[in-house]
Image 1: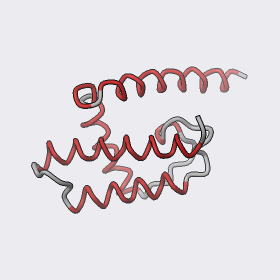
Image 2: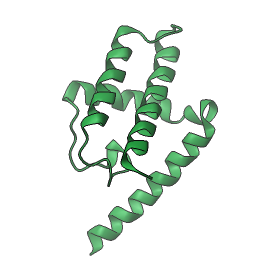
Image 3: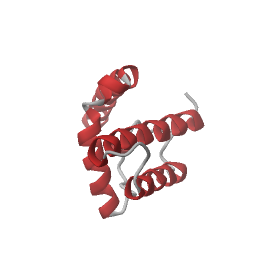
Length: 113
C-alpha cells in the first residue's frame, strides 16, 4: 500500500474512533468542540508523520509526536472506542487486530537480530 493511501486510511480511522467516543460520551449528533479539535490535531500529526511508510499505527512508532495533553486524550479515545469498533466498523476492527499482531511480531524479530 502506498504511503498516501495509508495516511488517508489512518486519518479516516482515527476520525471514526473520535466520532464514536464523542457520540457515546458527549451525546451530540456532531463532534463537540474538544473532539473536533482532537480530530484536527490527529489529522495534522498524520499529515506531518515522516515514518508513515514504515509504521502501522502511532502506538508502534518510536517517536511520539503528540503533545502530552493530546496524547492523553487520544489514549482515552482509543481505549474507549477500540473495543466498540467491532460493532460500528467490524472489518476495520478485525483488520486493526491483524495488523497490530503482525507489527508486534515484526518488532520482536527486529529486536532479536
